[in-house]
Image (tube, rainbow, N blue to C red):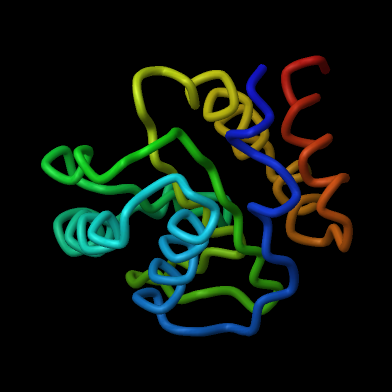
Length: 147
C-alpha cells in the first residue's frame, strides 16, 4: 500500500462550510500543494462537476479531473476535506467529506477501493466526519475492508 498517496498532510479537518466550487478548489489546491498535480488539473475537476456531480451519496463527494486533464497529474494522490457543517452539492445533496483524487496509472486504486468500502456504510462515514484526528481517519479508511 502506497501511503504517499494518502497521508496526514493530505487531510484538512473541521473546514468551515463553503460553496461546492470553493470546496473543489480547496481539495484541488491541496493536491497541487502536496505535489500530485499541476494547477491546471483543478479546472478539470470543476469541469467534471459541471458535467456530472461527483457526489456519490452518504455525505461524500469525490471530485476528480476529466480525462483530458490527466496530463497534469504528476503523482497519484488522494486528499480529504472534512466539513462538519457540510457543503451543498445541489439537488438536496450535502457532502461532509470532499475527497479529491488524482490517479496516475493504478497507484491510487487500492486506497480508492478502501475509501469506496468505507463510504458505503453510513456508520463508517459518520466516524470519518466526526474524527478530530488525521491518523484515525487514515486508519478508518485503511482498515475498512477488514470487518
